[in-house]
Length: 254
Image (cartoon, one colour):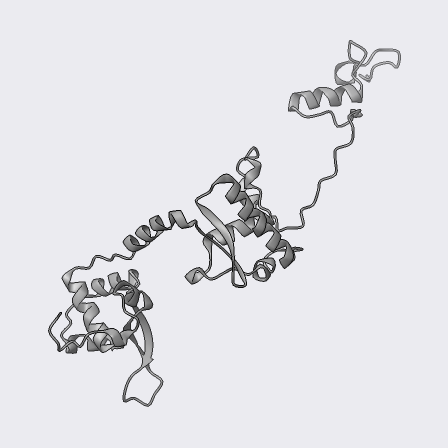
């Protein structure tokens, strides 16, 4: 006997019609969107169209810096002006001027003349705010420096950073290298230096010595071994213009 219901009977279970007459697709989408906390994808919006995003021609380098906090102050936004300010802050070795042409090569769509204008604007802003530093045109570029009335503090700080504290063993090792450089590792003992590797690592970390590979004297092959020699910082710390200013090691100290 067939269990199929007669065509006149109402379907039951999942085939039965909802008691309230059913839910339309639109209402179902709205209910699902409300549950997920999202906007109804089928609901027509009456709000005005969103404005078109403006594309910045400069490198968008601030994504990593500002992605952690979307509410970060707009001052962190990287622009040609802020990039120039950062480069001037770091500066070049020996406080050499930073040319506008060199800065412009680091940015897309920015000309050297624009860099000059940005530097002029920064200089005016620093003057207006009474900052202790200034941006000035020097030779063929720009530099950021302390204003004259504040430079004395920079000199004091620089003098303190040049001080290097060395114990007797480090001074002896430094003297052996300075008067006999370049000195191979194997030749230190022959010169009366018994300082251990830790002493030389300390001198290298402090920038007073460096290791260079040089050919072995008296050998025809291309064998190279590490040699110790002093660095420009050694001259700076001991106020020497060159190694020729070293005193004679056989003369008594003055």
